[in-house]
Amino acid sequence: MRRTLSVPLAGLMLALVAAPALAQPPTTPVPGPRDPNQPPASAPNGPQSLAHAVGDAGTGLSVVRLGPQGVPTNTILPGLSEQLPKQSVTEFGLGLASAQVNTEAFLSTERVVTQASPFGFAVGGRSPQSPGTLVQTAIPDNPQPANGGLPIPETPLGKLRLLNGSVHARWDEKLGPCVSPLATAKTSLAGLEVLSALPAEVPLPSKSLISIPDTFEANSQVRLVDLPGSKNKAVESTSTMRAVSVELAGGIKIDVASPPTLTATATGDEKTSKITYTAPVLKVSQNGKELGTLDAAHPALDVPLLLDLVVVRLQVAGLNEKKASFSGNGFSGFQLGATARMLDVQLLPTDKLKLPNLPTALAQISLGEQIVRAAAPQGGVVCATAQPPQTQEPGGPAAPPKKAPPLAYTNAAYQSVPLFWTGTGLLLAGVVIFAALPVRGRSRAKSPEVSEP
Image (cartoon, rainbow, N blue to C red; front, side):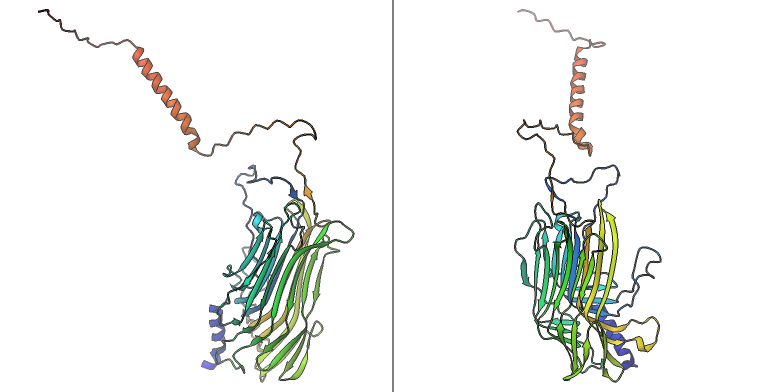
């Protein structure tokens, strides 16, 4: 009985201490006025960029999912949870790099956001902001990137030997996002071990399921590129990986012959916008014996570790695309996005059990998680500046300054001074009137006569 419950209990204990990777930081929502006729909170001042661009790219070195597709997705709309794919019970990501550009952000510091995070986690699809993150934002512009080492988390799900990050966020004062480089983020590590503290009851030849002895690098970038046949620009979001080899439990070795690259290019038109994906090419061997090649044509391979009960399933690609037109914020265009993974390692897949309502596996480790999204207005991004209105003709006299409108009364403090002087005036008037009226009903005292001696 103890051996039968050991594996589910181990997964449950890991789910309690673990936690989504590639979670992009949400931008501040635009506060709406209570009165629809109320003017906006602020108005632009001075020359404004005409460029409208939205794009983000996220890359994770490693993502661990416990109980993948095990819980429904929570939504505020009734009936929508059944239509959306299920979430993992718990997710934990290591070495995350994200680059985000949003010219429509309400806060100026959220126009360009780049982050390099040591880890990220989520439980049931809900994720807080992870500490120890290297962040650079624009506005204002940052001529130089920010570099530094990231704190290495201590977790039973993974061990990192050396983790570095680099982020760079740019912004032009006149042209806005029309600057190069625009948004870049990178994380790199010199070694990684995933699921290095499995319970002894899990029948694996070693205590570490995945080990990466060499350099492993994730790079996310958002930039504006030339639009063929136009002076405008297109939004390009790119996620790239760089790896040499991966070692798995049971003597399995995976050599990365060709790393993956995922790119989303938005031109504002559905016909010219595209998703470009270079699938990885992985050479799989076990104890020196070649087992096969993983690529777009052969995306899956099962490697048994203990008879047919304990199986490691290897998968590549897994490309998912989404495209849609949009309209809002004063302009319309086209947006698209995609997700992909360089390598999925599933421990104990459950498809052979033929039981309902089970997760797809006890645990799923993804190496090289990639997400890209891009959106551009119709006709592309306009790299120009709106000129402020002229207040005088060239060479002519200066226009007279406009009289400032009166300030709005917001509380009773504005009425205190007028009330004070009004009360003081009424009091003085009352004193004068009282003194001027004749005296009635009052006896006058007679002064004593003074006799002369």
